[in-house]
Image (cartoon, rainbow, N blue to C red):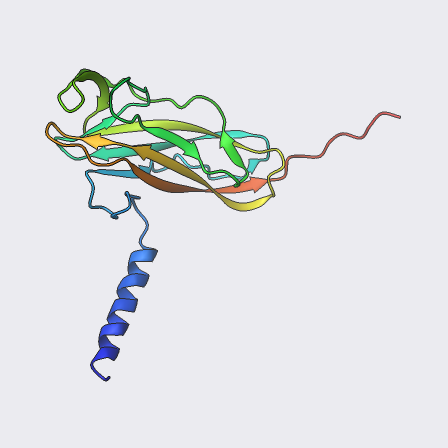
Length: 180
């Protein structure tokens, strides 16, 4: 029993440290995949955002050498495209079209079709609208990123990453009094 106690304490400390460390979000295997995601430093709002207003957040995909991240464009008989959405039920929605860099277009031996993809890194600008009835206070707009990645020999199963964006929601404002 005495020997189990130090191991249990060590495991608990390791779990707390892992949960507390910020930085990047990865797929289900926490960093074992060839693509990591992060919110670009300085792109999240630093001031309160009024209910009904839209703000933009940039997210960056870091892609290991030799791997590809597929573009937002669906390709018939091709890989699953990257999809970026906002999780439902949070008081946020997409506030417009996502801006993406121009992809590389080339033949993909895995799918035997011309595909669109990114190498090394890609930055996406996500417009996020605070719903008009959102409750004022601290909140998180959780971005959901579904993507597939391949190299010249293999493809990994599609992955889902969730990136929370901390937001302070301000009041929507006061309506002027009705004329009498």
